[in-house]
Image (cartoon, rainbow, N blue to C red; front, top):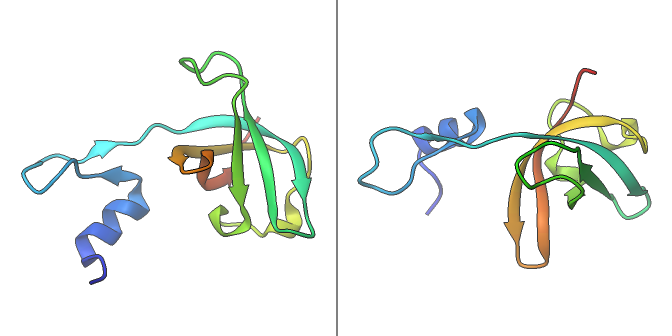
Length: 103
């Protein structure tokens, strides 16, 4: 069965409940990074987390075109500064909810 309206709103806002008994949503941290490599023909890129981010610096995160919010994959370029939510996928670190960051 699909997510309830409240769950979809929490996901969109970047908050996640820690279970049915949880009362207050937990804020998911966002990281800043730079687009390192792009595979435009395949629709994905890798984002490297910037220095000084609680042990996340230097980690490359996979970013699929469907993870972009508010902009199109064709606008992404190597060297673009972005913000994202880090997640862990079966194949390694993944960037979700990717937006362009201001310098």
